[in-house]
Image (tube, rainbow, N blue to C red; front, side, top):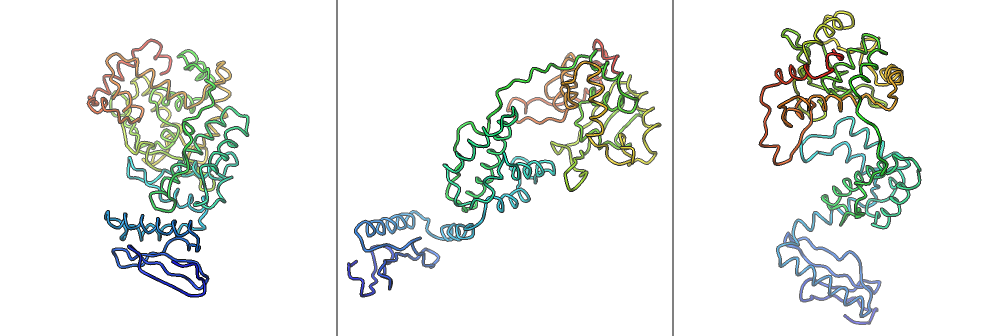
Length: 403
């Protein structure tokens, strides 16, 4: 190299090439194993510091070249970086939500999860403040500044959970961007941010059988049957409202409910039917004492077609959770338990089934549609004792009040 800027010079370094541009600055490059010339990401001045930086860049590329890199992978990475220039977090996140594959299941996100992620993306106390940022311009400091605002700006007890969810989503999105070589590293490095909670314990006890009986007394026949099925079977709201006549087997002593699907309401789309939350079907046996009520319900409220919904709305379509809530709120207040949610019936069902003598953890989780990947659980198996366990559950103290 020379300090003269009036002449263009080029030369062969120990590895790679250097040449002086008409501007007087220097350009460094090398030819990769695919025969493609790769230029340094910037040009260098004619100072000692710049000359050292240029030599270091070439030395690093030589080391990468000799270690087996520096070929098509480098080329693909550079192309990905160029492709990611100018792309905002919001733009990238939209495609990420549409195309995300869950590693554990190999399936795409469920409609409800996609809706929840979009809500977080658009929420003021979610990712909306970052949506317009360039993907490659989001730094650790950017993330820290954003998180401090969303975690503390809104003084609601649920805000910490909202912030944790938004942070976890951001970390997952940027993690994929790293895998696709769009950004060099994931700037989400705040310890514990994804596990943050409000630290406010909900002092809410499980409903007792007497309290649930009082709630049932404040409901009409239609909703009584719905609540009984939920409290004794542990079905999710989306599962129970997706039940069709063909899913109920009343030919035996017990009522067998085949849980095959779930339904979700999405803003702008309406009701969307899909698989259950864990993508599996299951059989849930209901006590024999409930069979008469189920048969009466089918005769009074359900059409004869096998595709007819078991718990339809007045128009024959899917029952909206908001419709049920109006009846549920009045009934729970009349029972003195205004804190209970409909989802608490799943907790009640799981606790009740767990009290059955001899029931295993695997049988309990299978009944309520939960999965676990704990190593010890792999060695437990369902035993085909659902009928026996349901008959035992029916004999538990007080259960007759729910039939």
